[in-house]
Picture 1 (cartoon, one colour):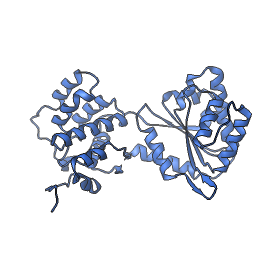
Picture 2 (cartoon, rainbow, N blue to C red):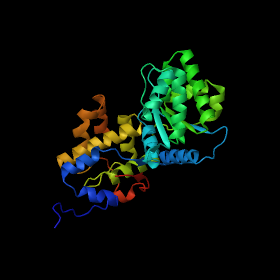
Picture 3 (tube, rainbow, N blue to C red):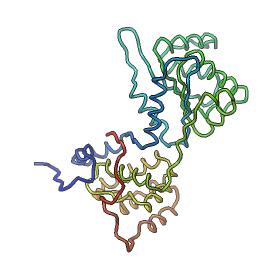
Picture 4 (tube, rainbow, N blue to C red):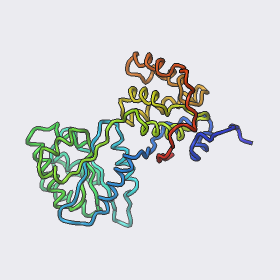
Length: 325
């Protein structure tokens, strides 16, 4: 006999139904774990990365610039793609098909080479000279079989002076020409501005924007997918335009903040026994998550009882997004 008898979990995806039967402490641990959220724009970005990865070797390889506000899913997409093409080793040889390196906060060519070599696990000599680091980096990139180089936080380029910016942009052109592999830049709008400042790079990097979310049918579909994937034992009526407007205000329209907000509300739902994200669980958690007290007032207004009937689960948008557990 099930220790946690549940009458109906049909509001959840099959994988989430099994998790919903776990004890509260285990479900809370699952809720705190990172999860892939396969919304359409993220899937499109993955497909673009896959197309670049499979691109035949040629003198001038295409590049991609993934642009969006902070905490809007860029790193999640990159990490998902990197896990699809993981590093491996056999005998004395290591293979790193997708290398991800973070742009230093104080950009310079030598600091970037240090980050690049560190990402490949290469030991560094004290006070190495730039020509030595350049040759070592190129040799190792070829040796470990890097087929795509991803540069995260590319907007940090603008933190340097004009000389450093020019040197680094020249370095990007050099790496692309020398290695003949696609380069992927990831960053905020400042990364786009940095690339646009160089005519040659602007022609080589195709931008793909990840805009903030708006309260529309796509957002309601996203919220329905969240509700179906979070292991709560009662339906969460969050896939409405009113709730979308409120949640996007709280999360500033970014999917990272939205996911964190819903995760925190789901944990409150488990701990309180409410078992759903609704008016009560969001109210209980509002002191921890709201950025100002006025939002609490807005929540009461948005979620107050209406004359119209509350949408049932069957009337919510179809759940078609890809979630990993």
